Image (cartoon, rainbow, N blue to C red):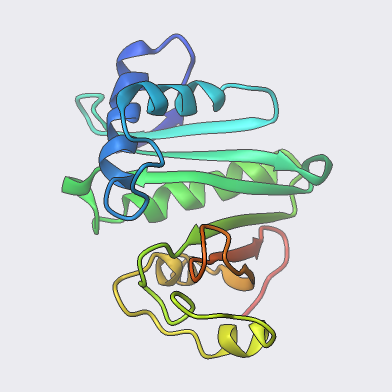
Length: 187
């Protein structure tokens, strides 16, 4: 497997990535990218200035996964958006390698922190389906994963929950905000 830039003139890879986006977000983000056209638009946006777009390829140049980064705060902070791995290849370390690669690219560009939002729209955690106000931090401190929510994947990569946006996706459907320093050593 190798990780390379997704380039705007690589139409075969762009279409493979778009298909992964539709497939990968259908279960937990229904309606986010419901068709190839909307997914292609998302992929093409990843070529804009201040963006990183990387893909994992197998030996036959088949796209196994895609990760993007968006510069914020004058390049000091980057948003990890999105991350998707082929359903057939999940659990094999591809996501982990893509995240580590993005961290390296961000650090090379002088970034200090990576942030991400990982929504809970279908009751995957104890933060979903309830009113998080007024004690949001107490709810975060007691979070539990009920149905394989990806926040634990990111925790294994060194990301921590830095907050939550209650009701971001409708009543009781929060966005869990996570972050990681790419320059500070934390234990």
